[in-house]
Amino acid sequence: MNRISQAGALFLALCLPFAASECLAGTTAVGAPLSTPAMAVPAAQKSVLIDLARAGTRLVAVGERGLVLLSDDNGQSWRQASVPVSVSLTAVQFVDAQKGWAVGHAGVVLATRDGGEHWTVQLDGLRAAQLELAAATVDQANAVNPDEALARVQNAERLVADGADKPFLALEFIDAQRGLIVGAYGLALWTADGGATWQSLMGHIANPNGMHLYAISHQGTRWFLAGEQGYLARSDDDAASFKQLESPYEGSFFTLQSRADGALLVGGLRGNAFVSNDGGESFQRLPVPMPISFNDATRLAGGLVLLVNQGGGLFLNGEQAGTALLPLGKPLGKPVSSVIEAADGSLIVAGFTGLQRLAQPSTAASE
Image (cartoon, rainbow, N blue to C red; front, top):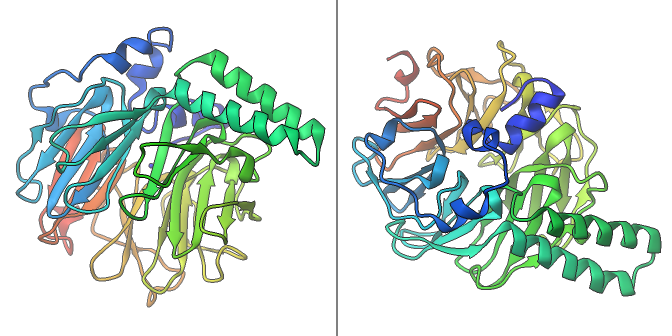
Protein backbone atom coordinates (compact mmCIF):
# COMPACT_ATOMS: atom_id res chain seq x y z
CA MET A 1 0.00 0.00 0.00
CA ASN A 2 3.40 4.14 -4.21
CA ARG A 3 6.29 6.15 -5.20
CA ILE A 4 9.16 7.36 -7.34
CA SER A 5 11.98 9.70 -6.25
CA GLN A 6 13.07 9.99 -2.63
CA ALA A 7 11.27 13.30 -2.15
CA GLY A 8 8.32 12.11 -4.17
CA ALA A 9 8.24 8.89 -2.20
CA LEU A 10 7.88 10.76 1.07
CA PHE A 11 5.12 13.01 -0.22
CA LEU A 12 3.10 10.29 -1.86
CA ALA A 13 3.61 7.89 1.01
CA LEU A 14 2.03 10.35 3.41
CA CYS A 15 -0.87 10.60 0.97
CA LEU A 16 -0.92 6.81 0.64
CA PRO A 17 -1.46 6.00 -2.01
CA PHE A 18 -3.57 8.29 -4.22
CA ALA A 19 -5.49 10.66 -1.94
CA ALA A 20 -3.20 13.59 -2.76
CA SER A 21 -6.01 16.13 -2.76
CA GLU A 22 -6.23 15.99 1.00
CA CYS A 23 -2.49 16.47 1.41
CA LEU A 24 -2.40 19.30 -1.10
CA ALA A 25 -5.04 21.05 0.94
CA GLY A 26 -2.60 21.21 3.86
CA THR A 27 -3.09 20.27 7.49
CA THR A 28 -4.30 23.55 8.97
CA ALA A 29 -7.93 22.45 9.00
CA VAL A 30 -7.37 18.85 10.00
CA GLY A 31 -9.75 19.18 12.95
CA ALA A 32 -12.72 19.84 10.70
CA PRO A 33 -12.51 16.53 8.78
CA LEU A 34 -12.15 14.72 12.11
CA SER A 35 -15.49 16.06 13.25
CA THR A 36 -17.29 16.09 9.89
CA PRO A 37 -19.07 12.92 8.72
CA ALA A 38 -18.22 11.59 5.30
CA MET A 39 -20.55 12.98 2.63
CA ALA A 40 -22.72 10.76 0.49
CA VAL A 41 -21.00 10.41 -2.89
CA PRO A 42 -22.83 9.50 -6.12
CA ALA A 43 -21.17 6.57 -7.89
CA ALA A 44 -18.81 6.24 -4.95
CA GLN A 45 -17.37 3.03 -6.39
CA LYS A 46 -15.59 5.23 -8.97
CA SER A 47 -13.91 7.41 -6.32
CA VAL A 48 -10.33 7.11 -5.06
CA LEU A 49 -10.29 3.94 -2.97
CA ILE A 50 -7.18 2.83 -1.14
CA ASP A 51 -7.65 -0.48 0.66
CA LEU A 52 -9.86 -3.56 0.73
CA ALA A 53 -10.83 -6.17 3.32
CA ARG A 54 -13.15 -9.14 3.81
CA ALA A 55 -15.73 -9.17 6.61
CA GLY A 56 -16.88 -12.75 6.31
CA THR A 57 -18.25 -12.87 2.78
CA ARG A 58 -18.79 -9.10 2.70
CA LEU A 59 -16.26 -6.86 0.94
CA VAL A 60 -15.25 -3.53 2.48
CA ALA A 61 -13.40 -0.76 0.64
CA VAL A 62 -12.02 2.46 2.18
CA GLY A 63 -10.68 5.60 0.58
CA GLU A 64 -10.48 9.35 0.36
CA ARG A 65 -12.54 11.70 2.53
CA GLY A 66 -13.85 8.96 4.80
CA LEU A 67 -15.37 6.74 2.13
CA VAL A 68 -16.35 3.24 3.24
CA LEU A 69 -18.13 1.05 0.70
CA LEU A 70 -19.74 -2.35 1.27
CA SER A 71 -20.55 -5.17 -1.14
CA ASP A 72 -22.57 -8.29 -0.35
CA ASP A 73 -22.45 -9.74 -3.87
CA ASN A 74 -18.71 -10.27 -4.36
CA GLY A 75 -18.06 -6.80 -5.71
CA GLN A 76 -20.80 -6.60 -8.32
CA SER A 77 -22.50 -3.69 -6.52
CA TRP A 78 -21.50 -1.32 -3.72
CA ARG A 79 -23.19 0.96 -1.19
CA GLN A 80 -21.78 3.63 1.08
CA ALA A 81 -21.61 3.18 4.86
CA SER A 82 -22.04 5.79 7.61
CA VAL A 83 -18.66 7.19 8.76
CA PRO A 84 -18.16 9.96 11.37
CA VAL A 85 -15.02 11.48 9.79
CA SER A 86 -14.06 12.77 6.34
CA VAL A 87 -10.31 12.17 6.42
CA SER A 88 -8.83 9.73 3.95
CA LEU A 89 -8.73 6.16 5.20
CA THR A 90 -5.62 4.21 4.25
CA ALA A 91 -6.12 0.68 5.62
CA VAL A 92 -8.92 -1.59 6.83
CA GLN A 93 -9.10 -5.05 8.41
CA PHE A 94 -11.72 -7.38 9.90
CA VAL A 95 -11.14 -10.27 12.28
CA ASP A 96 -14.59 -11.76 11.60
CA ALA A 97 -17.83 -10.83 9.83
CA GLN A 98 -18.67 -8.11 12.36
CA LYS A 99 -15.56 -6.67 14.03
CA GLY A 100 -13.20 -4.46 12.08
CA TRP A 101 -10.97 -1.40 12.19
CA ALA A 102 -9.83 1.27 9.74
CA VAL A 103 -7.01 3.80 10.05
CA GLY A 104 -6.09 6.90 8.13
CA HIS A 105 -5.04 10.50 8.00
CA ALA A 106 -5.05 12.74 11.08
CA GLY A 107 -4.13 9.63 13.09
CA VAL A 108 -7.70 8.40 13.01
CA VAL A 109 -8.64 4.89 14.14
CA LEU A 110 -12.21 3.76 13.49
CA ALA A 111 -13.94 0.64 14.78
CA THR A 112 -17.07 -1.19 13.70
CA ARG A 113 -19.05 -3.98 15.36
CA ASP A 114 -21.68 -4.49 12.68
CA GLY A 115 -19.71 -5.48 9.60
CA GLY A 116 -18.88 -1.94 8.55
CA GLU A 117 -22.39 -0.47 8.57
CA HIS A 118 -21.45 2.05 11.28
CA TRP A 119 -18.11 3.26 12.65
CA THR A 120 -16.91 4.98 15.81
CA VAL A 121 -13.70 6.95 16.44
CA GLN A 122 -11.29 5.24 18.83
CA LEU A 123 -8.20 7.43 18.37
CA ASP A 124 -6.87 10.49 16.56
CA GLY A 125 -3.39 11.86 15.85
CA LEU A 126 -3.28 14.27 18.76
CA ARG A 127 -4.19 11.58 21.28
CA ALA A 128 -1.68 9.21 19.67
CA ALA A 129 1.09 11.82 20.06
CA GLN A 130 0.09 12.40 23.69
CA LEU A 131 0.31 8.65 24.37
CA GLU A 132 3.84 8.58 22.95
CA LEU A 133 4.86 11.61 25.03
CA ALA A 134 3.52 9.96 28.18
CA ALA A 135 5.34 6.70 27.41
CA ALA A 136 8.58 8.51 26.54
CA THR A 137 8.45 10.50 29.78
CA VAL A 138 7.96 7.37 31.88
CA ASP A 139 10.74 5.49 30.08
CA GLN A 140 13.12 8.44 30.48
CA ALA A 141 13.23 7.96 34.25
CA ASN A 142 14.76 4.50 33.87
CA ALA A 143 16.71 5.03 30.66
CA VAL A 144 20.10 3.39 30.19
CA ASN A 145 21.02 6.03 27.61
CA PRO A 146 19.86 9.47 28.89
CA ASP A 147 20.65 11.23 25.60
CA GLU A 148 18.50 8.84 23.56
CA ALA A 149 15.71 9.09 26.12
CA LEU A 150 15.80 12.89 26.03
CA ALA A 151 15.73 12.88 22.22
CA ARG A 152 12.67 10.63 22.28
CA VAL A 153 10.86 12.96 24.69
CA GLN A 154 11.70 15.98 22.55
CA ASN A 155 10.48 14.22 19.42
CA ALA A 156 7.24 13.30 21.18
CA GLU A 157 6.79 16.93 22.26
CA ARG A 158 7.10 17.97 18.60
CA LEU A 159 4.50 15.38 17.61
CA VAL A 160 2.09 16.83 20.17
CA ALA A 161 2.82 20.40 19.06
CA ASP A 162 2.16 19.47 15.43
CA GLY A 163 -1.38 18.34 16.26
CA ALA A 164 -3.48 15.62 14.66
CA ASP A 165 -1.78 15.63 11.26
CA LYS A 166 0.01 12.27 11.27
CA PRO A 167 -1.46 9.41 9.21
CA PHE A 168 -1.61 5.80 10.22
CA LEU A 169 -0.81 3.64 7.21
CA ALA A 170 -1.21 -0.01 8.25
CA LEU A 171 -2.87 -2.19 10.87
CA GLU A 172 -2.79 -5.83 11.90
CA PHE A 173 -5.27 -7.34 14.37
CA ILE A 174 -4.77 -10.97 15.30
CA ASP A 175 -8.10 -11.29 17.13
CA ALA A 176 -10.88 -9.07 18.46
CA GLN A 177 -8.64 -7.72 21.23
CA ARG A 178 -5.03 -7.47 20.10
CA GLY A 179 -3.80 -5.27 17.30
CA LEU A 180 -0.94 -3.07 16.06
CA ILE A 181 -1.21 0.14 14.06
CA VAL A 182 1.73 1.98 12.45
CA GLY A 183 2.27 5.06 10.35
CA ALA A 184 4.28 8.17 9.59
CA TYR A 185 7.42 9.09 11.57
CA GLY A 186 7.55 5.63 13.11
CA LEU A 187 4.24 5.93 14.95
CA ALA A 188 3.28 2.56 16.42
CA LEU A 189 0.55 1.77 18.95
CA TRP A 190 -0.71 -1.49 20.43
CA THR A 191 -4.08 -2.40 21.91
CA ALA A 192 -4.96 -5.45 23.99
CA ASP A 193 -8.63 -4.57 24.47
CA GLY A 194 -10.00 -4.05 20.99
CA GLY A 195 -9.00 -0.39 20.81
CA ALA A 196 -10.60 0.79 24.05
CA THR A 197 -7.09 1.79 25.15
CA TRP A 198 -3.79 2.10 23.32
CA GLN A 199 -0.12 2.16 24.30
CA SER A 200 2.79 3.54 22.28
CA LEU A 201 5.39 1.02 21.08
CA MET A 202 7.76 3.59 19.58
CA GLY A 203 10.27 3.07 22.40
CA HIS A 204 10.29 -0.67 21.74
CA ILE A 205 10.96 -0.55 17.99
CA ALA A 206 14.50 -0.09 16.69
CA ASN A 207 13.78 2.81 14.34
CA PRO A 208 16.28 5.53 15.30
CA ASN A 209 15.58 7.70 12.25
CA GLY A 210 11.81 7.60 12.65
CA MET A 211 11.18 5.99 9.28
CA HIS A 212 7.59 5.91 8.07
CA LEU A 213 6.10 2.45 8.55
CA TYR A 214 3.93 1.18 5.70
CA ALA A 215 3.22 -2.52 6.26
CA ILE A 216 2.80 -5.17 8.96
CA SER A 217 2.75 -8.97 8.81
CA HIS A 218 2.78 -11.64 11.48
CA GLN A 219 3.41 -15.38 11.70
CA GLY A 220 2.34 -16.67 15.10
CA THR A 221 4.33 -14.75 17.71
CA ARG A 222 6.72 -13.39 15.08
CA TRP A 223 5.90 -9.98 13.58
CA PHE A 224 7.43 -7.96 10.74
CA LEU A 225 7.40 -4.27 9.82
CA ALA A 226 8.36 -2.58 6.54
CA GLY A 227 8.81 1.08 5.72
CA GLU A 228 10.66 3.81 3.90
CA GLN A 229 14.28 3.62 2.75
CA GLY A 230 14.33 -0.15 2.95
CA TYR A 231 13.38 -0.29 6.62
CA LEU A 232 12.60 -3.81 7.87
CA ALA A 233 12.14 -5.01 11.45
CA ARG A 234 11.14 -8.21 13.24
CA SER A 235 9.68 -9.09 16.60
CA ASP A 236 10.25 -12.51 18.13
CA ASP A 237 8.25 -11.77 21.29
CA ASP A 238 4.72 -11.21 19.97
CA ALA A 239 5.18 -7.51 19.10
CA ALA A 240 6.61 -6.53 22.50
CA SER A 241 9.83 -5.32 20.82
CA PHE A 242 11.27 -5.09 17.32
CA LYS A 243 14.85 -5.25 16.06
CA GLN A 244 15.89 -3.80 12.73
CA LEU A 245 16.82 -6.27 9.98
CA GLU A 246 19.50 -5.92 7.35
CA SER A 247 17.66 -4.81 4.23
CA PRO A 248 18.27 -6.07 0.69
CA TYR A 249 17.18 -2.71 -0.80
CA GLU A 250 17.52 0.98 0.05
CA GLY A 251 14.18 2.04 -1.41
CA SER A 252 10.86 2.03 0.41
CA PHE A 253 8.80 -1.12 0.96
CA PHE A 254 5.00 -0.87 0.90
CA THR A 255 3.73 -4.42 1.32
CA LEU A 256 4.45 -7.57 3.33
CA GLN A 257 2.76 -10.93 2.94
CA SER A 258 3.44 -14.47 4.20
CA ARG A 259 3.18 -17.49 1.95
CA ALA A 260 1.45 -20.66 3.09
CA ASP A 261 4.86 -22.27 3.68
CA GLY A 262 5.93 -19.43 5.99
CA ALA A 263 8.12 -17.57 3.50
CA LEU A 264 7.91 -13.78 3.75
CA LEU A 265 7.41 -11.61 0.67
CA VAL A 266 8.20 -7.89 0.67
CA GLY A 267 7.64 -5.45 -2.19
CA GLY A 268 8.12 -1.77 -2.86
CA LEU A 269 9.55 0.94 -5.07
CA ARG A 270 10.44 0.39 -8.72
CA GLY A 271 9.23 -3.20 -8.78
CA ASN A 272 11.64 -4.40 -6.14
CA ALA A 273 10.40 -7.56 -4.43
CA PHE A 274 12.15 -10.14 -2.27
CA VAL A 275 11.40 -13.39 -0.49
CA SER A 276 12.87 -14.64 2.79
CA ASN A 277 12.74 -18.26 3.92
CA ASP A 278 14.52 -17.69 7.22
CA GLY A 279 12.47 -15.08 9.02
CA GLY A 280 14.13 -12.07 7.45
CA GLU A 281 17.74 -13.09 8.07
CA SER A 282 18.35 -13.18 4.31
CA PHE A 283 16.41 -12.26 1.19
CA GLN A 284 16.36 -13.41 -2.44
CA ARG A 285 15.24 -11.07 -5.19
CA LEU A 286 12.05 -11.82 -7.09
CA PRO A 287 12.84 -10.66 -10.65
CA VAL A 288 10.05 -8.66 -12.30
CA PRO A 289 9.99 -7.40 -15.91
CA MET A 290 8.63 -3.94 -15.11
CA PRO A 291 10.16 -1.38 -12.68
CA ILE A 292 6.79 -0.28 -11.31
CA SER A 293 6.22 -0.01 -7.57
CA PHE A 294 4.37 -2.76 -5.75
CA ASN A 295 1.50 -1.44 -3.62
CA ASP A 296 -0.16 -4.48 -2.10
CA ALA A 297 -0.16 -8.25 -1.75
CA THR A 298 -2.75 -10.76 -0.62
CA ARG A 299 -2.70 -14.51 0.02
CA LEU A 300 -5.28 -16.34 -2.04
CA ALA A 301 -7.40 -19.22 -0.82
CA GLY A 302 -5.21 -21.68 -2.69
CA GLY A 303 -2.09 -20.51 -0.85
CA LEU A 304 -0.51 -18.41 -3.61
CA VAL A 305 0.48 -14.81 -2.90
CA LEU A 306 -0.77 -12.21 -5.37
CA LEU A 307 1.16 -8.93 -5.68
CA VAL A 308 -0.15 -5.88 -7.50
CA ASN A 309 1.72 -2.82 -8.75
CA GLN A 310 0.86 0.76 -9.62
CA GLY A 311 0.46 -0.11 -13.29
CA GLY A 312 -2.17 -2.71 -12.53
CA GLY A 313 0.18 -5.63 -13.04
CA LEU A 314 -0.70 -8.75 -11.07
CA PHE A 315 1.93 -11.35 -10.18
CA LEU A 316 1.63 -14.72 -8.46
CA ASN A 317 4.18 -16.39 -6.20
CA GLY A 318 4.01 -19.60 -4.22
CA GLU A 319 6.18 -22.34 -2.82
CA GLN A 320 6.48 -24.04 -6.21
CA ALA A 321 7.39 -20.74 -7.90
CA GLY A 322 10.31 -20.15 -5.53
CA THR A 323 11.93 -16.88 -6.55
CA ALA A 324 9.78 -16.39 -9.67
CA LEU A 325 6.92 -13.92 -10.07
CA LEU A 326 4.37 -15.22 -12.57
CA PRO A 327 2.31 -12.55 -14.40
CA LEU A 328 -1.45 -13.01 -14.19
CA GLY A 329 -2.56 -11.91 -17.65
CA LYS A 330 -1.83 -8.45 -18.99
CA PRO A 331 -1.51 -5.33 -16.79
CA LEU A 332 -4.77 -3.46 -16.20
CA GLY A 333 -3.09 -0.26 -17.34
CA LYS A 334 -4.27 1.86 -14.42
CA PRO A 335 -3.06 2.58 -10.87
CA VAL A 336 -4.02 -0.10 -8.35
CA SER A 337 -3.55 0.38 -4.61
CA SER A 338 -5.07 -2.83 -3.22
CA VAL A 339 -6.31 -6.27 -4.21
CA ILE A 340 -8.37 -8.92 -2.44
CA GLU A 341 -10.02 -12.23 -3.25
CA ALA A 342 -13.81 -12.28 -2.91
CA ALA A 343 -15.73 -15.21 -1.43
CA ASP A 344 -16.55 -16.54 -4.91
CA GLY A 345 -12.89 -16.51 -6.00
CA SER A 346 -13.07 -13.35 -8.08
CA LEU A 347 -10.50 -10.59 -7.58
CA ILE A 348 -11.38 -7.04 -6.56
CA VAL A 349 -8.92 -4.21 -7.16
CA ALA A 350 -9.07 -0.67 -5.81
CA GLY A 351 -7.28 2.45 -6.93
CA PHE A 352 -7.41 5.95 -8.36
CA THR A 353 -10.30 5.11 -10.70
CA GLY A 354 -12.31 3.21 -8.11
CA LEU A 355 -13.19 -0.46 -7.85
CA GLN A 356 -13.07 -3.22 -10.44
CA ARG A 357 -14.12 -6.84 -10.27
CA LEU A 358 -12.06 -9.41 -12.15
CA ALA A 359 -14.41 -12.36 -12.43
CA GLN A 360 -12.02 -15.06 -13.63
CA PRO A 361 -8.59 -14.81 -11.98
CA SER A 362 -6.93 -17.14 -14.48
CA THR A 363 -7.61 -14.69 -17.32
CA ALA A 364 -8.81 -11.66 -15.41
CA ALA A 365 -5.99 -9.26 -16.20
CA SER A 366 -6.56 -9.59 -19.94
CA GLU A 367 -10.32 -9.03 -19.86
